[in-house]
View (tube, rainbow, N blue to C red):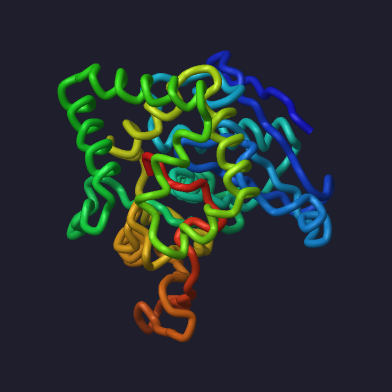
Length: 302
C-alpha cells in the first residue's frame, strides 16, 4: 500500500508498506541515492516471517517533497510522524548504506519507540575522531564528499550543479549509473550486480529516486558531511552492524568505528569463521562474510 504522510511543515512523504499487515513493524531506510522501491525481501518472505516492512522516500527523493538543509537527525522526526500515521507504537529500523546514519538517528532520538536497529554498510560521522574517513574509499566517492565539504564550508554551488547534471543523466538513461559503478566494484559485489534481474531492480530504484530532481541525493551527501545532530552514546536499543569487508564505497573501517561508539553493538564483517568480543562488558561481536552491498543499494554517494 502506498500513501503520502503529511509532515508538520506541510511536506509530503511517500510511504509504502509490504508484507504482513499486522506483523512486526520494521522501517527500511534506503541508500543514497535510493527510493522506497529499492531492494528488499520478497513479500512472500515478509509474510512468512510475520514482518510488516515500511519504506519511505527520504525528502527530495521519488514522491517526497524536499527538505532543504535537513540533518541526519531530522529523519527521526519523519519516522515518528509516519509511525503515528500508521498507528505504530514500537518498531525496529534498518538502514542500508546512506540509510544507516538515519537509522542510528532513530535509535538515538526515538529510544522510547525503537526496539532494535540494524545498519548495513553504514557511514561513520564526518568528524569521527581517530578514523581515517577516506582510507580505502573509491576515488569517485572521495571526490564527491570533498566537493560536498566545499559546499558546506563555502556555500559552493558547483557541487549541487554536478550532482544535478548526473541525476539528469540517470533520468535520461537509468542504466548509466550502474555502468559508472561497475568498474569500481570488488569481486563479490560484481557477482551480485552482474545479474540482469538485480541490474533492473537497481536501475528502477535510481530512476524512481531521481525522477523529479537531484534534491534528495544532494541533501543526503551534505547531511553526511555536516554534524549529524545527535549523540551515538544515546542509542539504547541493540544495534546490528553488518559490513562487507571488501567494500570500497563505504570502507569497513567505518563500521569498526561505529562498533566502538554505539553502546550495544553486534558486528558482522569479513570472515564467517571469526568470532571475537569488543570487551568483556559488551555483546558478542559476530563476523560474517559476503558481498559488500548484496542487500543494499549499490553505492553511489554513500
